[in-house]
Amino acid sequence: MNPFTIESSSVKEAAFMNKVYAWMSGALLITAFVSWWAATTPAFFQLLYSINPEGRMIPNMLFYAIIIAELGLVVWISARIQQMTAEKASLLFVLYSILNGITLSSIFIIYTSSSIASTFFITAGTFGAMSLYGYTTKKDLTSWGNLLFMALIGVIIATVVNMFLQSPALYWILNYVGVAVFVGLTAYDTQKIKRMANHLDSEENAKKGAVMGALTLYLDFINLFLFLLRLFGDRK
Image 1 (cartoon, one colour):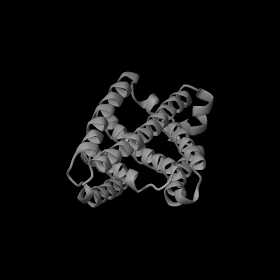
Image 2 (tube, helix red, strand yellow):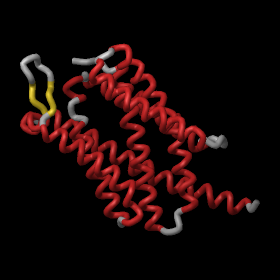
Image 3 (cartoon, helix red, strand yellow):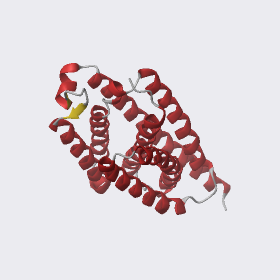
Image 4 (tube, helix red, strand yellow):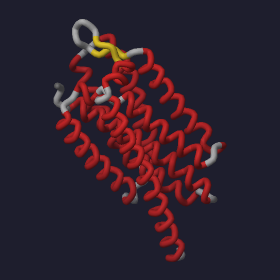
């Protein structure tokens, strides 16, 4: 095998992953700022939640509308990105990070700022370690994909069921399983995105691929953070 080909392939992968991580980091910063702003702006926060007589936050219609918009955006970007321009895909990703920041604003009301910060750094360290593993390992992680996807579906279904059962034991089990799933997905998705670099045949497709890769890792990071926060976050 030509050493030059190997080297050029590695350089291409590294350059592509730098773009992916840059987009992901930018989206996380946007989400964090919007989430903090929404939580500290009473007039806006009251559009999202009402407080019942027991003092619990009850989501308003606007909150559910934003959740539906988020889900629609993810499906739209994933399904139609090849038909979009890179600029449109980028703008939709930024819009998604803003909407997600709004729906995550409640964590600043529920959890202490110090536990949010410490959980964020734990998440960043865990994510970084697993993403590095996925990037550098010679092991093919393809077999992880189906197992992790099935586990994720199981977590989602069990979470919906537990909304009715209200089982504390199941709640804690699901959080631990959720952490394990997204730790695995971080490594799996990183390797998958890295391999994508050598199959992008134009600068336009490389830009769209970087956005799609960033969205995937962004979702891994956010979900890992939320599961860890439920486990280790200190409630006010």
